[in-house]
Image (tube, rainbow, N blue to C red; front, side, top):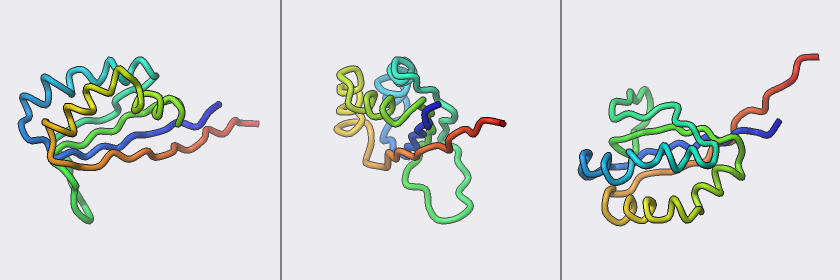
Length: 106
């Protein structure tokens, strides 16, 4: 069984209705083509320590590091990524986090 990859995003969204229409509403289908599944997505996060680096946070689970990288570099994602970076956000973070490998019971 391969190790899952989690993608944590925190973006500083400029205009939420525009972001939802031109990016967020399309991301589930694009991520899904690569086995990605949104586990959480919210404007309302609670920061217990430190600071949030944006006003929108999401966590996406991919079946592997390769699947997450393929989605990020894909032709399907390229126009969305460009629109997000160039128009819809004022920066933020997109972080790949390796998941824990499942152990099999003996």
